[in-house]
Length: 623
Image 1: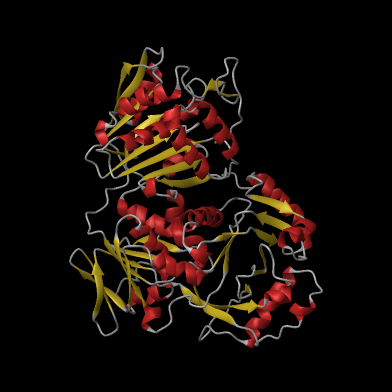
Image 2 (image 1 turned 180 degrees about the horizontal axis):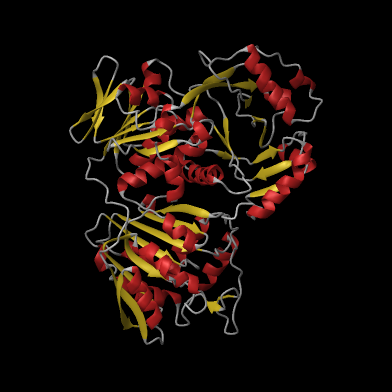
């Protein structure tokens, strides 16, 4: 077990003798005896000069330590709503080491939240994420209000945040009860996020705390307190030593996205949703075949790792982002949350899986171990072995999904195959093989899978990117099986060595193959023998109708995967080519990365807090 992984410990609902919400871990109450809303307004809003300080601003970012029940966030959100001079966007980043479960939070909000905040509290509870470590992005008011929740130790999370913070709400339990929430290293990590002119406020007011804040780079003073407390602390961030995310470059809010597959479509939706004009150049359309046309179904299932490594963390974040971004899409484009039974590779892995789940301590409603009988009951088919059940496993129809994402208002799709990019003014010009300009913008994003390597090479930009230079294309195919051959098909995704998907109306998709050094991606007898064999290996026979299927006689789909060493994507701005971005190498996890990487790039370009921790962003940065 990795020494760096610490399981999340949820909050326990408890009350003190006076009926106040109380933390048995820290021996302290959650909010002022005089009322959480009054404290939020006096200490945190007025203590930070709000709402006045945000007026006339395009966006405003708040960072909070100690989310608790979210009363500060709800009060801030209401103040934003009530202010006709509010900024167009309000971003809140809040760290919470011991979050409540959704059921507990909903019940507590009903009990403790005053009427003016009740409607907003219901919206918060409805979006509350599963209790999984890491960052969780929630969006309200059509994305104008975002809440990035960091579940885990603030000491670990704060140095991994990327944000330009305008106001800090320091609201952990009392310094004498939870000193780690007020120590110098954490305060320095927060001060490093401060934008010019940032302010700070907290109800706590000891000489030692003010000294710590001064050392960290905040210029603080005592101010009149709230609810019987003589004093609180307020101040501003000093200018020295700041390493906050740089302000976004002043660019035209127009981007050219090269590639109209899962990567390009995810980026297009994310940018257009923030008011950008997006031009997507699609080589597939130029050749008369849109990317993923005919790709009827695929699965999106998170990855588990005992040490919760980067791939597992990224896939979890990607799954959550995909559901949030795509669940409102029309028709068959929206994911179908049907769950995934991930079958163990062999019967001897049961104890190892149990140990992994115990070490991770993820909520059982998100992932749990199932034996063969329960796995079969969930699938509605006899499966070969037990395994893990992911309740959030999603069936996605890639062709429909991509078309819906590209239909986002503000996105224009043009046929065109980009051969190279050349500097043009402040930005870049995308040219075809004849040298003709296809489009230009201050921001150009190469999202054309393995084709991006060729564009970079022919543009003289591949040299500083040795990992990207190793990107290669792997062919693969999936097979469409009549649902009747599987008794109507499984009720959920069945995965493991290969996968078997529920009926999408035209049949059940089984997959997939991995073909190295292929000259073309095509459907064939050998490929179908492999896909049918993988599906059979997940099931416990006999299945006469399935076993009678003839390889080479079935419809299917074939395509390419762009694979990088380590099987993590390359996403970010090229350090040696400002304004030129890369989003490629999604391998066989295009659905996992599409929405997350779109939001990562769009948040960076728009100056928002990042939805991804900096250690993960660094691992996938182009190099």
